[in-house]
Each structure stands twice: as structure tokens, then as C-alpha cells.
Length: 165
Image 1 (cartoon, rainbow, N blue to C red):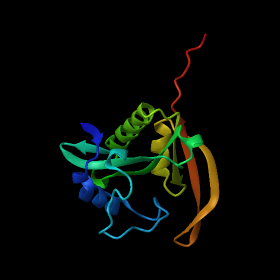
Image 2 (cartoon, rainbow, N blue to C red; image 1 turned 135 degrees about the horizontal axis):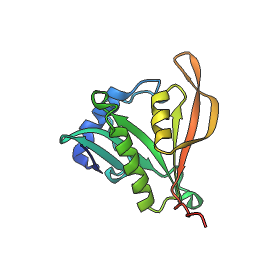
Image 3 (spheres, helix red, strand yellow; image 1 turned 135 degrees about the vertical axis):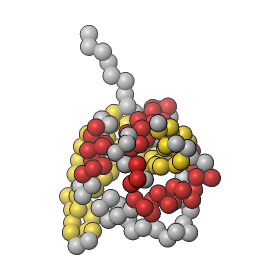
Image 4 (cartoon, one colour; image 1 turned 30 degrees about the vertical axis):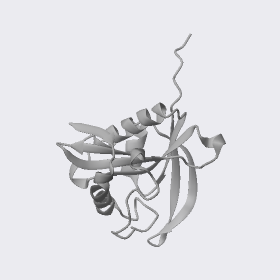
């Protein structure tokens, strides 16, 4: 069974290793960073949720504010999701996204957004299955491996649904 918890500094090496094993130009427009870069960078560990399966860290999701603007404080953004390839398709990604939605609600967000490359249909299907909808496409936003790749904006509303009349 997958459990999700808040990351700690002790998770840094495992999370960095997950980034390295899951990175490809099909899933990330930025180049893979050097091994000695701090996984957390300027983000506190509390902005990362970690998935554990049988006591081992097998995935993470990072939440971040998309901007520092006060007018944008009601929005949080998924700024990274990785699941160990050895345990993909076992519900870890779904568990992380469910936890991210709940954490975003707990923090008072009204929207949770993310960007995903069009060349990553598996992630797009996962996000859609978790309630994210496509809100826009930036055509040819990135040039990766000799081709222009679309950047897809997806979001889920966190506002409570009103029951019909």
C-alpha cells in the first residue's frame, strides 16, 4: 500500500536519484541537472510530498506558487512529479496527486495547475484521470530533440462543488 508524507531533508538523495532515473526530454524541457545540485534548492522540504511503498521512497510531487504576486495566491502548481519506473502503474502517481490536491486545499488554494509536455501522453492521461482538464496549449513552446513540442496547461478546481437545488 502506498503512503504519502511530507518530505524531509533526509529524503534529498533518494529524490534526486528519482529525478535522474525518470528524466528524459519527453517529460522535461530543462536539461538534467548535475548530480551535486541540492534537490530542494530554494524550496522547503515541506513543499514536497513523498510516496512510500513497503517503506521505500518511490515517488514525489512538488507544490509551488506559480508567482509571488498576491493576486495569484489562490493558485498552487504541481512543479514536478516522479514515480520510480519499477513501480509505475501501481497507483503511486494517483496517490501523490490525490495528496497534492488535499494539501493544496489545506493551504487554501482554489486551483491546482500544472504544465505537461504533449510528448508525455502517459502523464496527461494520469492527470486527466485525477480530474485535471486541459485549459490551454502553447504550440511549439519547446524545441526538444529536433522537434517543436507543445506545452499543455492543465488544472483542477479546488472549490467545493455546490449540490444542485
